[in-house]
Image: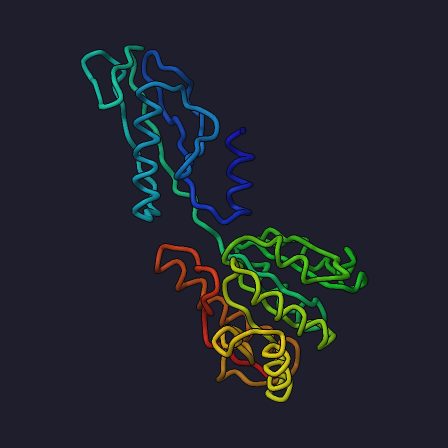
Amino acid sequence: MNWLRAAQRLREQRRPAVVVTVTEVRGHAPREAGAKMVVTADDVHDTIGGGNLEASAVQRARELLEAGGTTPETLTFSLTDKAPTMHGRQCCGGEVSILLEPLPVVPAVAIFGVGHVGLELARILARHDIELYLVDSRADNVDPARLAVLDDAVARVHVHHAPVPEIVLGQVPSGTHVLVMTHDHAEDAALCDMALRCGHLGSIGLIGSSAKWRRFQGQLAAEGHSAEAVAQITTPIGLPDLTGKDPATIAVSVAAALLVAFQRERDSGAPTPARRPATRESRP
């Protein structure tokens, strides 16, 4: 697979990788400056020329992946019979410099319900480098004209009109933060039930009142979920100290709590594991 298509796919899948670029060539070398490949823990996409050069670059890229490295680094290789490595000799006669750039795993957020709050939240989150999934069972809510406010998004926005929105839960990548805020409490309940059955999600947040949550707890227990499993859903969502019921304030509160979760992911050097509530979010 071409390195660029591979990088795009790996981003969507939230899989870490390293982009390896030939930055400078002196003398003879297998590939010209600008050649690239993408290295993952178990695969290589495209090539910088094969042989000792490529094998050494792949080895170093995987060491960076294993260590959770985020800082780019440059390596220089002499391709002569006087410069053997553990991968053998490469006698092209030149010298090659390569740049290794770790590709971060960007956060992923799925908003189920793009109503007043959902759209305000999407507008804020779209200003960040994330994978953003917008899902609604109502076609009007995900009409391109309504979502035109996201046309300048930094995020990669994935829009789903889904009459049965819980199906989309199985399509989002591992570790996705899920926010349930549809117009229909029955739809919310179905999403919570399915989210708990999925083993690949990150945090699960539900908008609503304490009375709504008490009803949901009973419904989810009746569906066979343990109290421990149900406790994986955080509700209310947002920052507990930021009150207010207007859509813009709620959206700011929820977005701020998510940004805290994203920072924790960056600080830990690893994506959010499946089924770990990222923050104790709160919102009416």
